[in-house]
Length: 391
Image 1: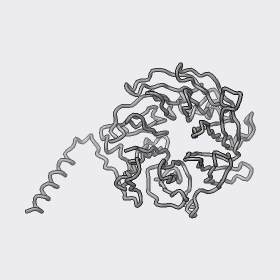
Image 2 (image 1 turned 135 degrees about the vertical axis):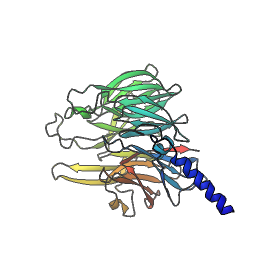
Image 3 (image 1 turned 90 degrees about the vertical axis):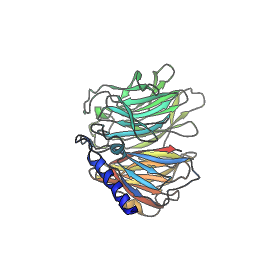
Image 4 (image 1 turned 60 degrees about the vertical axis):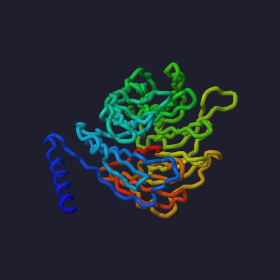
């Protein structure tokens, strides 16, 4: 009798699932058990990962690693928001959490998706043209934007930063910055914006815009290097800024410039941030943890036409490279194209994504703080950006 009741329950459940309207496509997220992830002593509940997807393919997806159950869930947005047309959209470029909301910047779909951070259920979308990254300060979200469409154009316009009220989720202001602005960082009462000028190749931008947040006005530009991309604030109130260089632009007015990492700080007698150090190491992406800056780089030598991968650690106190490989067990050879990095704020575990060939599913690898791989899991296409969710 007990088996019969179970059978009847399952039968009616299946009937309900298959009796949905024909225009509703129910997508069930995939899951995989991950060893050694449960840690009851930490304040971190899980980690979201956004997969960019190939440009023009509308394949941006959202994954979630649940530290409380040791389960990795793939493509949860589609499952939890079955009625949203085109799902997340085209090219996920950033993901952040603020005030209980999850913000996913979807670059080529010209929008920021806002979800409930606990459930992944969509709240709304904010339309911003060619948006890139998002940061927060005192109840507002700041979104960098190329403003124009996706097009290499030496006459591409200046970019902008949009100001969004995180309560109403309405755009309330906009300020013009440099060409094709990328990552941003809040330091004190200022927002620092790395300008790339990537659409204007070979005439790249080489500045960091400084925005006074109270008046929401650009007050200064700091000259650093061409084609800037990443920017991180350390615990000493300094800024680490990376440039992508221009390996192939032999006709560039700047000449051929390699990727590099720079430190900006306030010197005695100066009120503004200035470039104080050049680390002389290529940097594609980076993450800070304690006094260590972890970075990876995909460096290309235009003369030899050879590329090399580096997984380095910089001691931010001495400003010296103390390791050229934070992966110590040899498994770095299994990573074809590193594309994202983050550090667990409490355990120090290192998360590195692999985009592989940019068209097939990628992977996420977890390394302990000694650089030994703990596990690896399959992701969506081009896994890129991660953010931790607190309990």
